[in-house]
Length: 267
Ligand SMILES: O=C(O)CCC(=O)C(=O)O
Image (cartoon, rainbow, N blue to C red; front, side):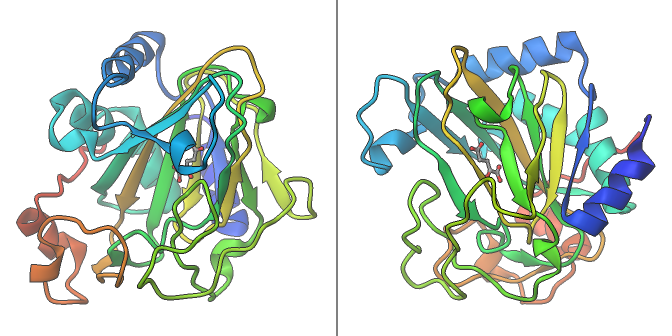
């Protein structure tokens, strides 16, 4: 994969990287169709409503589609998405933790607030990352992700929030998330074309603006654990099946089968 070593260097130095043109046109069409098929599904929460926004353009999101839709499991565990992620994480194995579909209609002003994914993951380790695959042109003005450089190296832990507000989820642990200007020093990101993806570390602070463009901003986000990840339930964070029954500190390699988390095929 062209440029993957440079992407890995940047991921570990800055906390995020971009890999361009990873997914081919036919696969993008299949992912778009799968995402569009969820549009009226109860799996998709109205995040605009959670933000108190009444605009016609909505922000909708769902999680764990792979559990009930085999095509989502296939997107996340086979082909170039996990292969690129494992190369960037420098991990010999990769376990699917979660997937998420995130659709911002044109005209949705709702921002994704600053957060780290770490607070939501019932796992701990340096080799944990999220892929954000663009299915539509996603310049910054349409809501591609913004990252805070080096924040993955900070030992601080942040409380997970409701994603579109800064309110922490009750019962969670850590500091309150910051509210950073998207033009602040150290904030960076990329304009993306369909098939490009960013990969960010689970401890990297990130956010996205609303979609000020004229086309939808559909994204598939996939969260992975690598070789050094261990199970660690985070109090108050949304639960995942089986995690409470696994001893804290158990290696994901040993726990994944019990948890029903598939290992990706890396080619
Ligand atoms: O798509 C978005 O607006 C946010 C996605 C995100 O924060 C993530 O996938 O980690």
